[in-house]
Length: 487
Image (tube, rainbow, N blue to C red; front, side, top):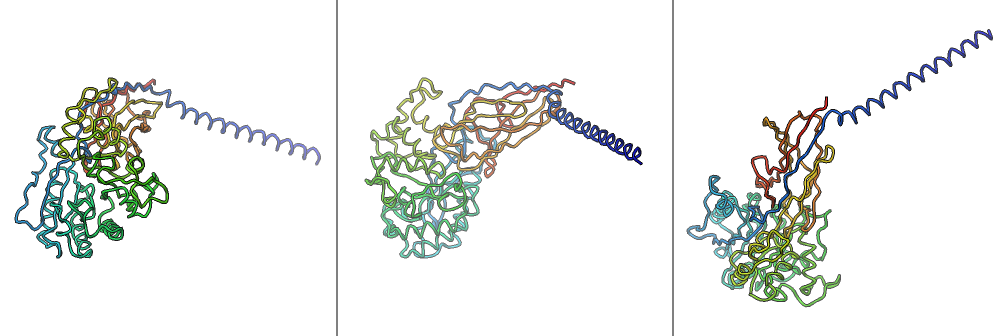
């Protein structure tokens, strides 16, 4: 019995050793296979990326939502509508396309219906106006008003309720054109709709009107008020949107500014005040420096634009560039003030290190209104393709763009890869680091042209970078990728 027991114990130990050996073998095999899978991919191919030079361009770019705008006026209830544009012609020249597809401002006068609802015919006219500009390929800044002659107190409705009703009616039409209407200015009241000299400019009335306009219009449409203090009063706060709250559809995330006294005087012709900024003074108009600091933070998330006025040292070229940049201005009136605009055209931008050196001041400002993206570098790190892109414009693009990297083989096979990055947060003066992982091991050996493309999904329109890359239907050619198989 004792011998038999010892034999069994010995047998069990032997089996354990064998089992352990088998287990160890399988574990080592798994480790080997994992290393083979991890390292083997790198052994099977070699990828060599050759970037195109990232040369910055000083050219004017035809990009949406930004630039110098033209203004057109319409009176609802009139016998005819003039100034309606022709539909977009895809066969037109590039210069014609640029003029055709830019940002425009439409002023729609409701004075024929001051004390009654808009008629079906008037609403049909509004639909015709917006439809024409949509077909034209333009992006619309829209302002409803009751006055063009500085007599709003005489031509506005006699009740707040009538204005609210007009907001209800017009919103039904506007909401059908959210792919065309970019932003709305004002709350229908004031001389020329500029929120001044009106029966309805009390804090309570302004707040009621703006909150109602926000409620009845689509959240994708930006809204705007004439002065920073009006925004603070309407929201009862000096808080600015943050990266976490921006673009969430709330009134705070939609409410920007329009300044039609820009650079006109030390207080921008009544836009600013004489009170220092503090937590307790947000319902007062602050001094210029404090209001510029306020806009510098606010307008990274909501649009700011308007028109310059009154030739004076504040709008001399160097000072104008500085303040337009701080305010993050994305659009300006192309016709007013001619004295200021002509001064910019006569002045030369001077910076020997800049591609804009020697360009007229007007052209420099035009090229920096809104966003302007310069691709600074492209690289392939292992299987990660990287793009460094700097925003050299005055503002962000307030619409999120679709980003795509495309590889096209020498025999025409196309491989596209979306890039994850929120372009709305590409803050002016900063560089965005874009990256996308490429399945290089699964690509056949050969040569691939690498393209980068930015597209506005609302307009289905490509966004142009400020570089000299060649372009075709896949986007801008930024380099060449050579893949060779080792075995």
